[in-house]
Image 1 (cartoon, rainbow, N blue to C red):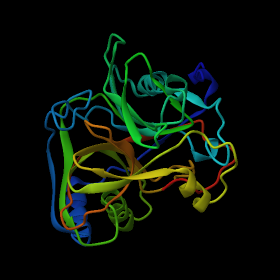
Image 2 (cartoon, helix red, strand yellow):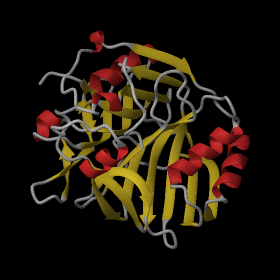
Image 3 (cartoon, rainbow, N blue to C red):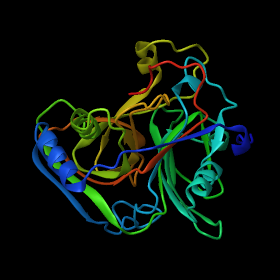
Image 4 (spheres, rainbow, N blue to C red):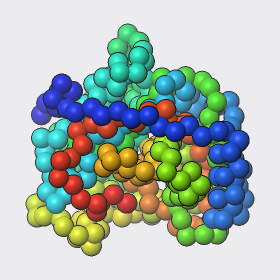
Length: 322
């Protein structure tokens, strides 16, 4: 099935607020200490994220950092709209042209390429486009197989489609300064990403801030879901949704990619969305860790300059976004 042409899609763009580094550092340190026993927050020169354990398709997160969201949960629920099939490469390349970028690293969470794997799947996108147009893919998909087990597969560079929705951190993948957050031993109720997002939101009131990047669950395990094949019956409630989804306790190490924003900005945005993968069979949508006494996180994030919203649903709802 052919993906939608970018010429058919509405692209909406808005500026994001970029907080002062030192203020953001102080705010995050204080906020994260309410939820974790050991916390460090720093702005550092980005390490080579193409190396293990992160294994990104490019080494850095710098260069016109942009938060991108296409589609949305209303195209999946209550019943899937199969025609909402996007091409991550062409969508991101159009954003690059808007932002005068000559290459990109696109990392994030979305629905996988169902025509490729013949079933619904989670997409863990990790794609680099070079200035000559060549692609390097270190993307993954995760599906529920016939035995109801989670199965992770690599996605080749020849397959760049994504169904119904996605949240992408887009940059030129260059070296540069990044926000590093390290947390160990969870003492509060929030997951790692929620605590970061709520801390920023509560301090920078009425400011539109977006972050994206990668984090590593170094120790412990995480509760994550994988979508089963598209439901044949309408899903109208969170309870029906959670019955359809398949949940697993996935062991570290897990590498998660995605985005977070502080406000919807009248763009019907998903406030946070991260998918993770491992070198074994695991892949899925991150909810929270299940081992608070031993959990350890390390994350590297870029701060978005702009947000680009693509193909925002005209009819919307608010469930299915956790």
